[in-house]
Length: 331
Image (cartoon, helix red, strand yellow):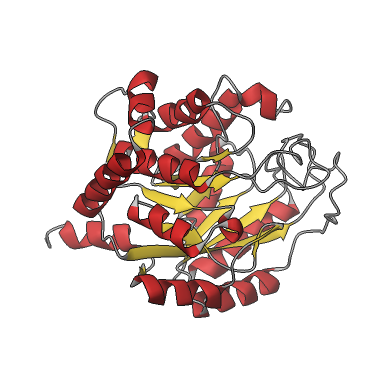
């Protein structure tokens, strides 16, 4: 965990974000190499274990039941289907598998019992297991922790001020409460957001302001570029310029030096040169595999070829945990 020593103002974050681009990238690259292995990238794979039919109204999401996006609702996958996918992801170079369910919140029922089995099964494969299941309470977080869950993803999406423009079926504090419940169960936190939803620079930096001023920095911060999907309220949003992604990643890296910064949704639309700049600026994780829940994503083979071109290596699973254990002297 990266304890948060001081409060950082929104104005200070904006000042970083608005630096001349090359100066910003150089500063972020310097910080990144001071605290991390610059050539090492964590490869994660995302499985949609329950697709579509969500009751929420997130303006960016094709899985909301109220939008006509062509996404068919599917019931929860079987444990065997998940372990088969996880095994293929591991063979492709992934060290983390994230399981996503299109739920507003977790309910204590047979489906959640099955998710617990999935977590146990994938954890036994020496893979970091992450879940993103919507809102969870303390008891549910503890059940996931006891099953071996390594991380829980719950993005805050945007700034607190802009949140109501994106989602109306829950509020910003609901997001923060779930993160608190995850932290209480000693599960690592994965939380970031999306740019390209019509937000301002102040909103982007407001999102980072919330994350950087949590009692403990999230161990992982995904930075997503909106993939505009026909049928959602955001279908007409223009593509995110690569320079905006570079700025967000660089600013995140400077603010949270030891956090894993994830270059997440939107990579399918990025050139190799654009992705190279993102890695230079401090991104040290990607999602690999042909889909991110329901949106297109580069395949494992494509990403491994990119790694070869850039001289990057996949990060081993549980690296931080293993390093921490190695630092504890033998009794």
